[in-house]
Length: 532
Image 1 (cartoon, one colour):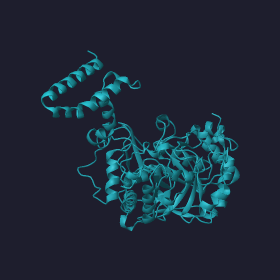
Image 2 (tube, rainbow, N blue to C red; image 1 turned 180 degrees about the vertical axis):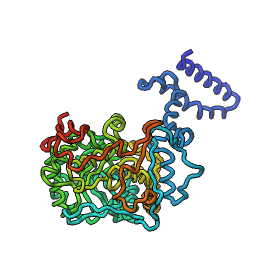
Image 3 (spheres, rainbow, N blue to C red; image 1 turned 90 degrees about the horizontal axis):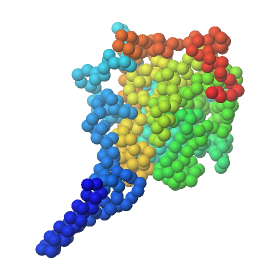
């Protein structure tokens, strides 16, 4: 018998039985309080035409959707191992939680990692380590130098770009409060500077995306006058031009309609309640030379604050084109933020998150080599962003050439994020990635800002302790020879062997450049981005 027919038969029989019972006991009719809604759902399921499971299996077919809804939580709490959870493993999550709460962050009984598995990485230590207590516990890097009137001394770990809109007002305020307590920087994300970025007084890196939110004319173009107003804010220490994002390079930012409140719409100068798609590219420049000149313009308009750009590396020749433009104009960004393809986002098409863009480690090594090859590595700083959760993660990207690091999801977890994977639905249960007041009011700013500061403090300390174990007393001495990777069971290579450092100025003569860069260099032009 078909499930639909069986439902009809059972419904008729149950109704008949209740009426017969009610003939003797009138209170039996109360059974319809339970049976009635179930029969109504079943009839609705049979008549609806959108979902075949519910149509073929009335009432019970709904269990499929219930199981789908609770599956992520069941998997995370009861099935996944400590090392295999995605996108962030339980081990990494627990390190963040414990450091944020200042609980014990040591582990018993040795590593849970398979040290003989392909891809396992480790740091080489020295037989004569440096005394950790004599080292700088809060190392910083100067951004801007002589060409900036207002250079900025940045921590080695900072809050990566997350907009108000993607995150709640309480989350933004707590992140900035943590940055204020810990003395590190907070990137605004491309959604503009909100009152919640300013309330706590933490240092800001103001990000300007393709939508120019907070610095645009009415028709969506970059406005020098509007830019100067925000750039002059004392909290704004640096300006970052967003070219692309690791989680969705080439796509542009997405703010779901359900999260686009009137307040957010006013800040971004858009229509509330609509899905906001940032353009995939900028309209203020269209060539590498124009990009470098735009950076010069913003530096001047900001009265000498450091200005740089952020990108996820894609076509190699396009980045080399930017390097050629720098060399040709003898003008340089103060920093370049490299966002790895493994970076996070509140909302992105799966094809872009899974299959577009270069991962962080490959990107940092390539960008560092490109700058060295043109002899301009000393002219700009590199910021690395993408799954930075521990001191080892900081050390690893610095070994490849990064000067400092940004972290987004680790900072979210310090706020209380439980990786519920509901960022794009406005239903984040911890109040971090939602605009629902009933949810974000549960996030107490004064408590969470201290947790963010705690996580930063203890993670930087762990990085410095690792540094001392290598026998190094300064972050500038880290090299690719300090990190090793098992590429096969019987093959171990250092990062220097996997990502060989190029000779300084070796790209200036393209015919003599290393073979793996030669073709890309010939495709690169300061006057245009690649046509590939």
